[in-house]
Length: 142
Image 1 (cartoon, one colour):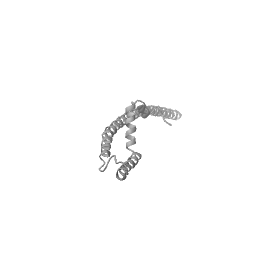
Image 2: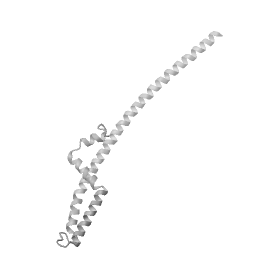
Image 3: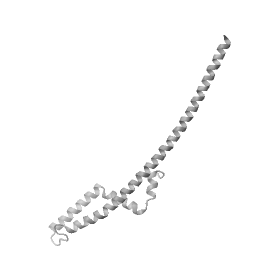
Image 4: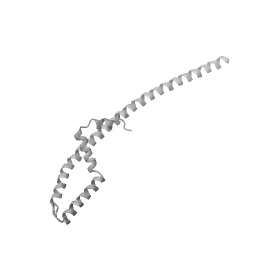
């Protein structure tokens, strides 16, 4: 069940497509699934080029594979940094929302404390009045 009114849902709704895409890419590249799939592809690439019967498109030392990794790293680093910057922005937004909630709770607690103090003073005033009346009655009987 998703809550549309929480701070995170509002933040995600306001993100442009590019930001959401960058977050999706960063999340994908930071997963075990990506590491496993990439490892399998690299091993397959190397195996096909080492034992290929007909055509070796990237012979050892796999210069094309190194170029692909360099290109991937050149794009992955800024995309991941963009995602981290947005995560920092989300964290700041969340901290501010928490601060506002705590501030509102503090004000409510202070108001309740004042109300309780007023009620306590009223009770004490009534008790004092009752004690004084009892004393008067006792003094009158004497």
